[in-house]
Each structure stands twice: as C-alpha cells, then as structure tokens.
Amino acid sequence: DMSADFIGAAKGKQFCFTYVDGTVTVELYEYDLENLSDKAKSYLESAKTAKELDILGKAVPAEINAEGKFIMIVNIDKAGESFDAYKADLVKNFTEFLGK
Image 1 (tube, rainbow, N blue to C red):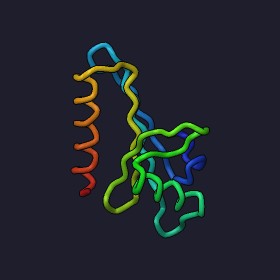
Image 2 (tube, rainbow, N blue to C red):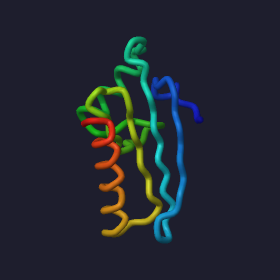
Image 3 (tube, rainbow, N blue to C red):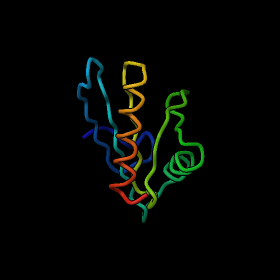
Image 4 (tube, one colour):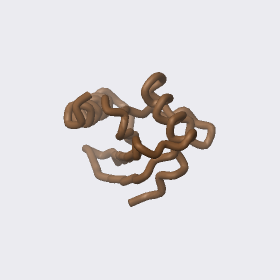
C-alpha cells in the first residue's frame, strides 16, 4: 500500500519490476465513487480528459478505466521502441481488464 490521498484516491498500490534492463513502476489508485472530494473529482477529470495528472507541478501521464474508479500511472526508466511497446501493452491490459 502507498499514500493515495495526495490525489484524492481512497487506496494506492505501487509495483516495481524489471523489464529487459529497465525498471518499471506501476501505480494503481482506487477511488470511492460514492464519496469523492473536490480534489478526487479534479484528478479523475484530468485523467479522463487530458490523460495526465499534475503531481508536484509535473504533468504525469495517466490512464483511467471506463467506470472512472481506477487510475494507473506507468513509469519506465528507459526509453526506446521496445519500452514504449511494453508500456502500451501494460496500458492495454489495464484498460481491457477493467472494461474500458
């Protein structure tokens, strides 16, 4: 578990693993749709419309599921075509699994 209230989420989980020679960090945030603060609404709207969140003044790419209950942030510390494809696959699996 990790802190999630800084983006208005009820829960957060972080997973780190290695892909080829890069480190992948996946953050998943869950929102309580029955009890959304103004901060939560703002972050959910930003993920939905801009596909990014403002975290500490930095625009961070983010994905949201169709229900609007989960946000995923993926960071890979390496660049290149294979890493971009892997990230796209992670996003695809996230959105498909949660019915986007």
